[in-house]
Amino acid sequence: MLRPAGKAAKVWNPVECPLQWGLMPETSDASASVEFGRFRVEPHRRELLADDQPIKLGGRAFDLLIALIEASGAVVSKDVLLDRVWPGRIVEENRLQNQVSALRRAFGPDHDLIRTVAGRGYQFTGEIRARPGGPAGRSGARETAGDAAPAHPPTNLAERVSELIGRDKDVEEIRDLIADRRLVTLTGVGGIGKTTLGLEVARLLLPEFADGI
Image (cartoon, one colour):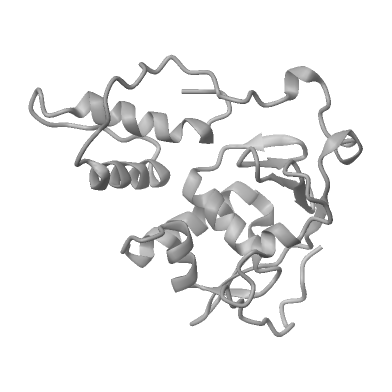
């Protein structure tokens, strides 16, 4: 169910209500989820599902979705979203637009769940329902042990043998590129650390891929 388009929308103030997500579910269960229409968000697994089937969604797009859901129907300004999705970084506004587009593609025919409010920001228009975790709360979902997400996604990545020093900016840039594009290639002369850098980014992204890397 969508909110009427003509209904006045308040602007979310993250200072007055910074922890809206934590207050939404009527339970302290960390495995609680949120539903809207045919979609379900599992925040502890960083997963979006449609009709109980997982939808591929990048980490930045997922952070954007959570920020919009937290606002409980209020308009969230672009500045607030940029600070939330790229904390401590200065990024161009088109990065945010790319993630909004990614969310809308994920929602398919329900793309109007994300509403653009001209000159103000974005608004999540879905009717949110909180659902506690545990067997009772998951009665409509997959309940077999084989469907449960592993504590750590499977991986064949090599173990880190030393800390990566002085490449924080490069790591963040590559993560942003991966969030925006299907294929990212690292190029350069031999011996500058391309493989080490790529492995570090892959380790950081591992929690976002339930099937492993």
